Image (tube, rainbow, N blue to C red; front, top):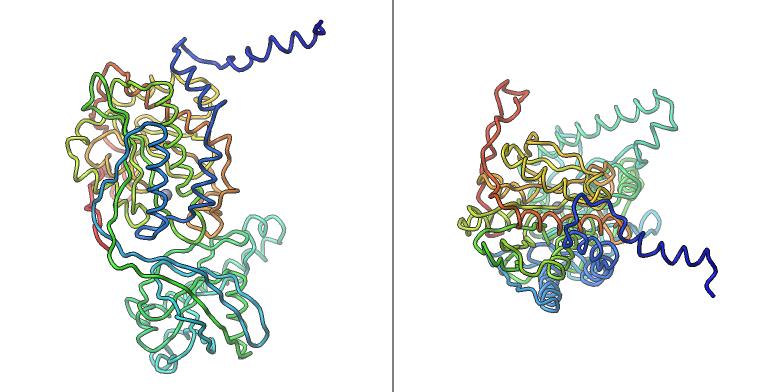
Length: 508
Ligand SMILES: [Zn+2]
């Protein structure tokens, strides 16, 4: 005989799983909740993409590997998938990097190569020097032949500002901030004295390596971007280690560094978006577009920019295929290339397929990190706000309860791929999260890795994306495109102009 308390628990289990606060009895939404929240695949999908494939820089083999993997996954799920080629890019990859201080003592330094930097062809070793104050740059430049050059300011502290402000006296904080501003000013002038392209000027003067540091104002985080250098290896050094080298050079303590940087060049390679779709049955030429860029910067694994957006849309497609395999409108997903170089993949798609853009019911883009979606605005589209508000009202409050709707909202002029469609007047929207540590700690940094992903929130976001795609697809009404008068710009005192479309870069 089953004890009474256990029997009560057994009865409660299925009840608990179904006790979501849905507004209607819609069986598809209930099945989507179950598929997305209880039978989620986000964790294994994210693990392969971030850990096994890793960074996905435009033109790098990692991007191709991520595309091949998407083809495999969609293929297994029975979802049509194809590459949409829109141009070419520079084929480049980074391999291993070792940067060691060998004088005045020996220490391995924390470093990341900048994108598209040349490699070293074996270890190189030289004295470290520093770009001097602006008025001395011209006389100094001929002395850099064969040297390793420090070419950015060093931070007075690599402590997170929040910690400093909590623990130090206000006067101490002010002093450090003033010191920092003075360093940044001085270095702006130094780099201007080198001309419009500081890295090129240094290598043309014979520098064999350029070291910089772009601190992201948190413990251990630097933002890692690219270089225009063509012969000198260009490397970002961690805040702490860059400060060490700077102090040694400024105090004439003879810093020498050894660098071994592997890179590969593959010439000009095709660049493309990965597209997949579930064809509509009643209105196949009208589209709901799920959108997230697939490319990333290269110094970490692009977990929150934009691995999480990629997995959100991939998992949403799985949920849709399982629970809503015959949608009313076509559900299309765009895994864009080249977002980090200026929304190139999505801008090219919008330019190349005007018939799709004209027939977009809605675009849902996600590109700002892990954590729950908590803000959606209709980007200045007035009538469309009613459609979105109706869809959000259908969501279970476990998901919609986090979301602030801002209708029609102030409109963004940049930021991510939704603007590639919004600029054409289409309802291009963003599933947004507002969590300040994203920009400080993971966005474009060397710490954007798998461990930062909040899996529960990723499940929430994938289920949300699937439900919104379903509701947008089923809506009896086409989403209207009438535009609100935008808020007044503080600069001009006039209402802001509607966002303009920009041409994508279709080559490096
Ligand atoms: Zn991004």
